[in-house]
Length: 297
Length: 215
Image (cartoon, rainbow over the protein chains, first blue to last red):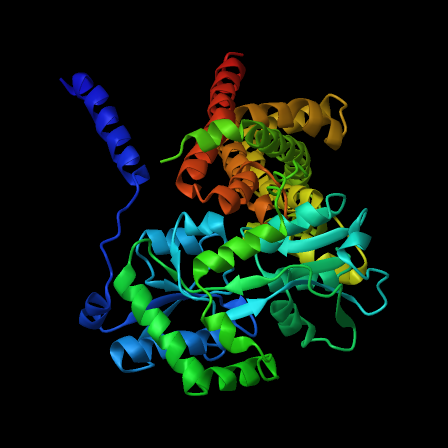
């Protein structure tokens, strides 16, 4: 009797395992369900100053993206503090949105067509561009100088795919966070770090005497807020917020506070740019698909 | 579900499998050597060597493996020593797993009746010769089950090298996930690839245990 039960036990176990593999369908989160819950859950970076950084001493996060998130909470819940910040990485932010762990992604995310097949985006709220961070005495002046050199970036990001495209002869080192890459750069392990200029700026500020940005901007990266696919009510609330903070001057203040300068002259046009248009423009920069990750050790 | 992502990227995933194998085999060789040396240190009559062995085991096995790998990758360059991600991973895995092998083998050495060491020395072998030819072979044969456990853990722990830019099984799955967003499928595929290594390894361990048991 005992033995005959075993195959069934195994079948049940296998079914349970398969069940965990089935895609979890997150229930639709509308502004109303968020109100009922009383808290907006936002996926932000904890390790990407000046957009999102966690201070381990106070356990508080702050940054440009954090202020944007607070503005959205204010629109939906009437209180910019009714918000729960969830730390995400470039690699796990879209899965976390899809499985319902978070309501929004506000995490230095570039709007791309590939991502738009997975999730929806708000209008553009920032325009960054990919650049390089190097030691002050580095001979690297452009991504063209990276051939035969090593460059660090992070997994799941657009710069990771772009750098393989524009500098196919560079050794690409892929770590988990920008500060880790910066540590590798400081230790002389890599010749350069690449990601969006504003994030490199945040790192460079930690040691401005020894590091500099170089190579100009060789992409533009339109940032958008990620929303679960088809969630029009929440997208509308987010876009309303963006229009509002552009109009009442608070966006310009956030920009000046975190990026130490006023937004460029044409910044109002960013907010009018639909995600479809932004993704299309991003795609035209690089017509060919990014090469597959090389089987480096 | 987009299971075709596994077929489309079979080449990259297979390359990742080879790198996981490479890391695992190198780490096994180094950590086993460390394990034997440290186990012997812990049972030698010299008190100084005992303490050195104990210090190694307690220090290394009580620090998280990820911290040890990061130490090789991020901290050592500040004193001018640079291992790439692959060798940082192998070094971290080797010293960490070595501490566990040392404990397993030491327990085996204690299980060999002390009369054997004395008899071997009485018949003219030096302490090291007696260890090498009489005690250690029996100690290791007796401790195949814990050695096997530690080896399987080491193979699975090798996935941590993906955090220092090594495109092993997990690292490749993560990189492909960033392009295709099919994380669920890729992680399931990665799990299967680990099983491709660990199940034969487990069978090999069982086989070795049976063979060495018949004496």
